[in-house]
Length: 154
Length: 154
Length: 154
Image 1 (cartoon, one colour):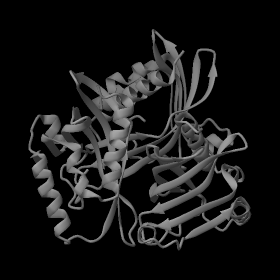
Image 2: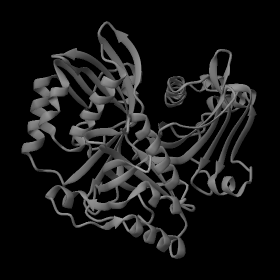
Image 3: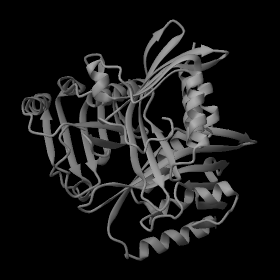
Image 4: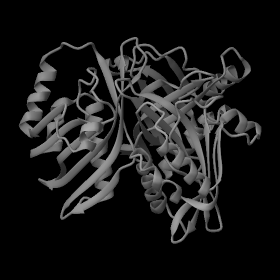
């Protein structure tokens, strides 16, 4: 069973890896078959599944990371992620549904830091290979359109 | 006695209900007789009680919610609340004084997410009907005037 | 040994003192010999130690505070600090290395609240005089230059 301490450590690692831009380590937080989606709140609440970003396997996440690291088409920027309190919503056998708010801020060189994402994450974690992994992560963001500036994963 | 786990669960529920705009559930987080205030930091530190928003019973909170849900005079927007760490300041018999920072961000359609409130909450919780409720909640915000854009409760 | 509860209480106090602008209490959070640095991420990641703000003793922190409280050369403003989850990175004997993100927001009178600092703090805590204190605090901020507006300590 994934207890509260294990959850805390999991998300500490998850966000730490992303904040440090160690993108190649990111797909390993997911199971081989997984759902990763970034979806506007309106679509989500209306029951639509049309997502801005969508992946259904670890392989697709790896592709995404390789696309990001190979192309250098973006102005240099830093992201930093501020997760809200972790809420355990349900336990389904050995799996656990976790929800938490997420604020992502972005700093471009010589620019003021600004908010790039305000969202709630609907996650489903399972134990896989002796460690917790995400079988599902749905990031529901408070906007109609995802800002172009969201380049790196949430 | 309201322990740390109960506090965490209480605030998880409280902010979750507000983030989800389930406003009709909000007044039940307060005792029948209660104090709910939103007050600028300058007034609070000077010892004035002049508040921007004021209610002294659950009934007044219900009225406030009904006013909000009936009138549709505001541009659609989403709020999301990011509470800081919960600090237990004092225990007074079965009651507990809790303090925590609160950042509220707002997203209007097609606009960038922005900060709508930076505040510290001075709360007093009691056990009432087998669950914790707020007997007092004073939201002290870092500004002289409350932005007009603060429409929904904090 | 400084356990998780002691860490939580330490940072609750630390940020509370700063949010309340009780600056004269701030140096006591550090050991007599200490390192306090605010450094841009680029420098830090390149291994440079050139810092924007630097102190190597509690006495220098006291001087800094006295400079701030004596001169009234700044427009009045409020800071509020939102630390992310505390991560224990390593234990070195009785000392503990702690890392956490930090968002500092600033409110000037009649202005909108804005982000003034997005950073990660690399701290080293030791037990000193029966309480935890910072022997080292390195605040690595996501920008090339520290905004002029960062006047008060982080």
